[in-house]
Image (cartoon, rainbow, N blue to C red):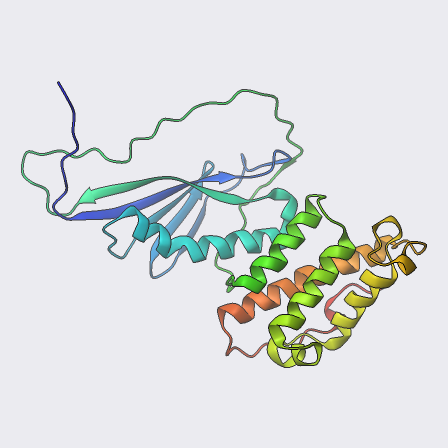
Length: 259
């Protein structure tokens, strides 16, 4: 006998389920369940899955996923800014859809998923006892996306710290309309931007952007400073993107490790 899906009278996305993906170097096997609530959904994370129980009505999976996407992106960015080596990501698994006005005698089965176990050796180095906390007031626009991507390239060994730092400086300048306008636009002191520019241009050794830095290797302290500076300014730009009218204390070199 052939099978066909009966249409629903009043479909409602009750839950969205995502898989927690991460680097092979970490695991969340012992992580405590995490619960987070917003006006849009109630989130529960446990056993490698994130379930969004929707409070508002969405008739289609696409609409529901679009609604939670900014929250997920901000969560992933915040996780990267805490420890990008974890590569914490949410991958969509399935939607659970119910019929709020079912036809008597008709049963719907939706969201059937087949899980496939993949073999292979996995070396686990770090066991996390908690999941990254969601809810950071961050948002992503093209400038944040560009800076975030360049930072990830550095973390993954696909570019140098000097390239990542200088790229972020030029992205900030372009977004603010000039270096002198960065303090007003983003609340980031010029001294931070100047130091990022100087270190990425005058230092680097084999990673140097310019010839004059080839004979001037970067110290561990300078590399750590540049890494923290990239994370600091990236977070601030994402905060401003989320709430342009918010007034936050200006970031200065005092917010970074001492050189």
